[in-house]
Amino acid sequence: MKLSLLMVAGLAGPVFSQAPPPTLDPGTRSLRAESPVVAVEVASNRHDLYLLAPDLASAELVEVDLELLPLILGGARAIDAHRLDRPRQQEANGEPEWIALPDGGVLLRASRGNRVGILHVPAFGPPRWAVAFDGVTHAADLLETVSVSTDGRWLACATAPDLGGNVLRADLLRPSAPVDLTVSVDALTIDALSLRSTPVGVWFLAGGELWSSDGVAAQQVDTARLPGETLHGDLIPSDEGRHLAVVAEAVPAERRVLVASQDGAVVPVTGAPQPIELPGTGAPLGPYMALAPDGSRLAWLTDGPPQELKVAQVAAQPVETHVTQLPDFPIYIDNIGIIGFASPTQVCYLAGDVVLATVNEDDLIGVADMYATTTTTDGVPTTWNLTRTSGLVWPPFTVPATLSVKTGLLDATGERFLLVEEQDETFNLLGFPIYSGGYYHSSSNMEALLVDLEKAPALHSAGKSFLAVSEPDGMNTVEVHRIDPIPGQPMAMQLVGSFPTGTQLRGVQGRRGFGAFIASSGSDELWVSTRGGVHQPWLDSTHASDLSSTSSLMSGHRILLGVTTPTGVTQPAIACGNGVTVALPLPALPCRVLR
Image (cartoon, rainbow, N blue to C red; front, side, top):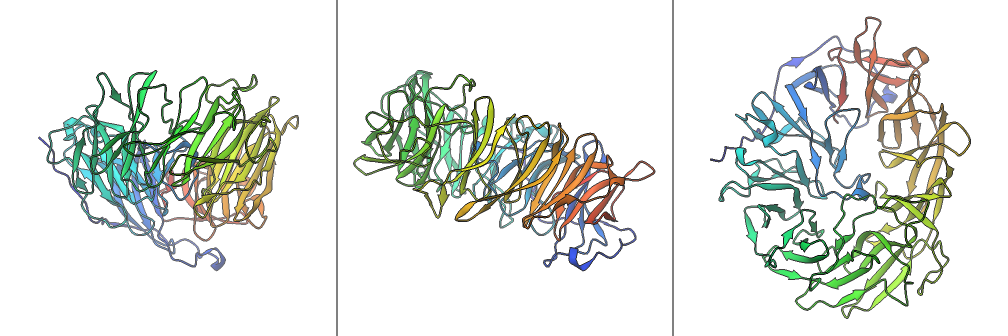
């Protein structure tokens, strides 16, 4: 029997107030009035949610005794982890994971009494339950892995059979009751890791079968699998959402890639079973498979050695293009990764030599460059070298490249690629423009941002900027650099500060060119960094070692954090600069700003 779904349209609660805080300097106020939402930890992993007034003089209690539960974003590409225009997995200091949305809102999975659901804290307005069930015995019956469409609007989640075995779709832009896409079928055993939410519907696996849906109802897709074939849960949807690639295999050495359409058609694009690499969405240098934005082409890797890149049209009789073959690419090409389409005809990818002796992990690329290839309707390829460390722009690429790639990711806007290179037992951080206006750049502008580091640099997202924590070779110190993307220009990099060896950053926040972080070593220091070049501690030394485990950046260059008082309690306060803190009308307990 399926349990009924409860959608809460609005929230209200008693007003919690204290004496108003001292008047803030007008220079610290935001020009746009905002109402921060703060989670106050009243007991171990039990939180009350408060909605602060824009002037911070009062607080409204809007949710009581919430237990926050892990919420995992499924299907997100590892290289998109820092993109602000995509939903992002968030975690910090032992807190249960949550999801940040492109518009500034967040999603939390939570329980309260016998209610379990997904709480949406929008960029503006009060929190609301996007999905909620009452009368639930086991909170885990609302599965922790969900999917959010790349534009941040559509949430897809699933329940265990004991809670109905449903797939639900919720609109995060226009609040309304979520739609149970499987209400007309018996309870399903859903593979939550396979959930893929798109602008037009949801894809998922249940009981080993592929299901598709529009915004109303789900239906099983007949994939015409061969005897013994099973479907892998790492599904690859097209950007428009009407097409999806899925790997079918009987044994690992015999795989096919099927491309399904929302109308139920299925095309076996790769032909007879053959060695094919799995999609690798979450791999450090993945993915290894992609669909064109309109679903018209598929790019995939063969499972080597040697690895080869192939592209084919999604059609009943596809024209297959072997991209990395002779004479364009030499025979020693044997590591390929980070495949993505910039347009319906153009695919980008790293291609490199066998893994170097100094780069001994299986998921790393050896000496490599990044290339772009377009294919015509007849399958004719045109390839060029984007990074050009070999010095060659056009094929044949007979001179080896020089990048030993350890990690790759896209910046906050998705326009620049950042690569961590390992070379001669040291590390370099490199960047180059890759994407702008819908097309990858055809010219190279490789930037050496940090070189000769003892360890791979740690990157922290701070709004549209990065904070890079590095240890220069032989310097016995930790440096923090700020990296700002500038459209059409090389990245701007500034030294924020030098810190004792072992210093790590936490509570990193960024907002409108202003950044904040806690530098933790023997003691804690709250620091700020601005695009204009101001980098300094934000609180005086009397607060050292007394800062809460997290900080949150609010409008008007204000930072919420917990400051330990002489009586030993943690008082939520606003740091306004110059060592000044302003107490907030909240309980003296650990807290963090949700928005």
